[in-house]
Length: 455
Image (cartoon, rainbow, N blue to C red; front, side):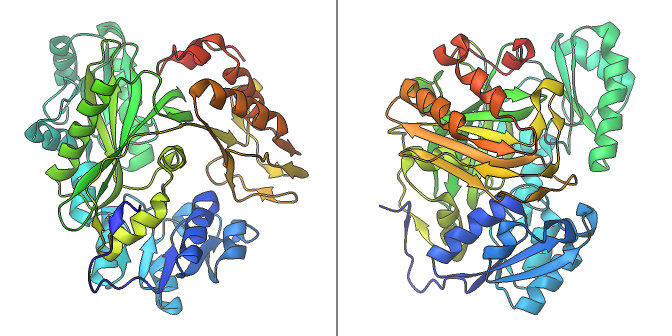
């Protein structure tokens, strides 16, 4: 059964432009083709040979390699919409996916933005506003400052009131940028300057706030879906605790840390979060969970995420399809979903793990992706493809599923052995070692796990 019920007189889109690149653009194109919807790919000159360009019904070059002049250029993307006569835009993840101004422009031009409204994006995009919204909704939040910190003196006073360790966070942040952990007062000024400078350089906004730093936390997120009729459901959790510098490397569903009671509590909290802003679309409510199973709202991502695939595998649903149908006006059937299998995703990046994960762009000389029951590879690359140095280093996602976590890990090890990429360095060797680590196998890890992981 689908997550959704077809509402009467709802018209499906004729043509969707995917305002993104690479793996996620190809992922959306595949679903659109299965739904009978025509697709438009946009691409920079650096991505002319990418598979998302090859498999779309139409493709429009929108500029040079620089993201600012291509994938982040709203005028150029809207020009592509106009010349191809697309009636909807799917933003994927990253780039303009959580840009309220972009969603606003789409609305003004009568183009459906496949995602939440501009107002919803703004409420959740600014972390201070999001936190205030969650407090009003009764969702547990991490103790911290009331609003932005104006100056260094106020910051130190707030940190002392909360109690060290604390974490300084950029209000417009994402991807771990503009975040600094402060263990003691003597280090505060240095970390304060670093967080604000990085936030200014990355987001054009040096506003920061302070929160209590949760020691040994798990990063657990709840997948939600909301329709245009006020209904919000959850699709259970993903554990994203295996990360490096706040960048996720491995995700799995369900979490080995989860209990039935905790899942119920976190699921209800995530639904509260969605209903608080009358959320429309597929989104993720992210929580930090301490070792005592106390959980705290961290942020909400108002888009599809990289790791949506592990949820798809354990509930056997196409989330891109459901996302498109919600945008067209379909109604949710009102059922929350609980995993019946186990899935793990390894992000395969063009990086050299032995050199501190240094990016490694270049030409792929040979490429063989693993196959077999319960093995899925989402990628836009192939033998002969040149990985450009301008964008994120992820070149593939390897997802395995099985009846149990133990079986899933064994399947992942087998699949990684079959994953052959020659000509560049990748994170495949890192994942092989991780999957055989005793603590990982036992589920004994938190967000700081890789700090002491030797590779």
